[in-house]
View 1 (spheres, rainbow, N blue to C red):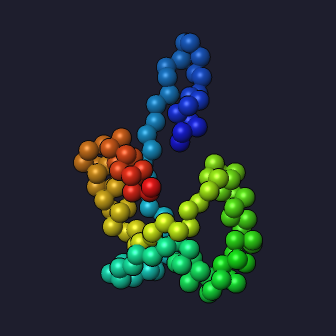
View 2: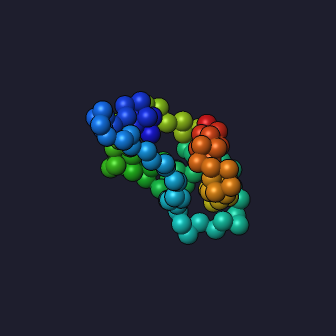
Length: 115
């Protein structure tokens, strides 16, 4: 998004400018996770548990080149020790704010939730 905003499409001097909006649609990596079960834990702990222990997690990182893909996407450092939790409620909140107050406000909230 930052890239698109920093280098807008040149439509030429006789063309109207291009406008667009980003609407976030939730994508749940674990859609069958029980949303009534609260959890707050470090990302690292959650991923190690998800992939069956440290060995499974290390295999998953290598298999999918997670570090390389993150760097290619502009994420030079992913903080595995930040706290994570069930994201269903935060997705609902961001969508509600977007519908009620507009996308600029919901994007600001999204950025604050993902510190």
